[in-house]
Length: 411
Ligand SMILES: [Zn+2]
Image (tube, rainbow, N blue to C red; front, side, top):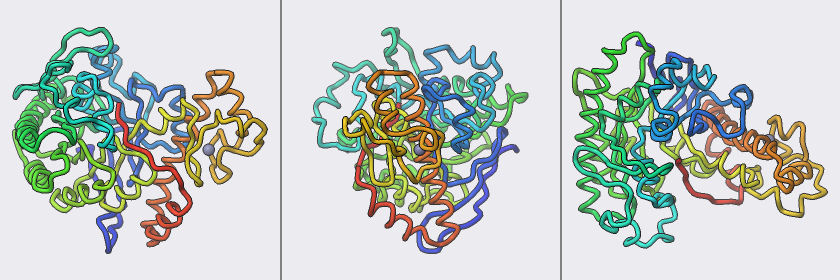
């Protein structure tokens, strides 16, 4: 067995804990933020720079890699880690979220601010949708060329085995906050049935491909904003066993209002087996990371840090701002004078302002390095605070200064 999770320290007054995930490609000290390299690259940043900024693992997306370059090519290359020149641990998302969001064509349906979307837009009867869900799987149109594809639990497992990440996720139906209660119930039943099929297919593929490193399979907990559905999903998947195996860990996914985030995570984590790692899918805004850690989340992934960096938005201890703003034209200070990243120790806001305004490629690279370092380090600091017993003070201190509230993001 090349996969394990050891809890080194558990908080006495919350679900928070500090641990170590061991994979065939190395260890992850948790809680940890896992930067996203959607198509087997963190856009504009070298893997060496990701390691230098403290990234312990990277997460890529099965849906994107399946469409391009094709997962057989990654398999031939020797797996994701080898293919992308990242020697550390890797994760892949199952593709469930992507086929149902990119495919559906409502890229923002899972945004945490539910007020901006009308219910009808989202649940309009497959009419304007590019994805169709049935009990067997999902048929969807590629967002690249409109070609028709089908994902089932079995195909998602095959695709993720070909990619070969250390931690992979069961294929789930990801709903939105606007689906009716009845639909959420159906989706939970479907996700349950798909989870069983994922365990079976995963067991079969692990046998057939024994020569490859062990891949840990995480079940995904859905149930939107409903306490009974979330708890049922956690109880069912937490105990689920098929073909003689259980899930190695769990992902918490789906629609969550920002205000309900902590409550939902608590419902789920109080029910799931304590000794398994818990991953919060697609959430990575600074204030949300505190809520996750406090309620027992071990790992996070989110594309937000790099996506906003490319639009010149950067995180600092005082909040988030845009480097393109003309007030930075003659600002010869670092983006964040408390940050130890390559960008902050070598460049000024004035330089960053210049490269963004002149559309130089290096702007994306430098801003991404800073943002990823900021988030990775923030979670590292939470881990240290838990060990030192001052997490609550550290959280109050950070949130007292930090001024921007932002949403979740997956892609
Ligand atoms: Zn920095």
